[in-house]
Amino acid sequence: MDYDAAKVDDVILALLYLNVVEAGRSWKGFDWDSLNRLHERGLISNPKSKAKSVELSDEGARLAEEAFRKHFSKAE
Image (tube, rainbow, N blue to C red):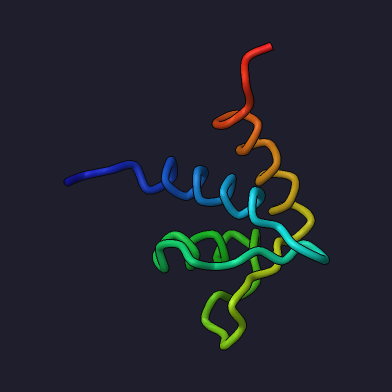
């Protein structure tokens, strides 16, 4: 199936925001291709490490919060 990888990356970024724990780190249990693209854009740390989490950059955290609100907030 063809899909819009940018839209998938946006939702994964939003889900990373949902799972943020201490110091901007989030569990990395998502599609590796998307995580690699997010890393290439400078939004998260390198997912190809032994760590079970990635760190969101300042820009990544900002965009993750925006994406989370866009996709998952309740209408006011």
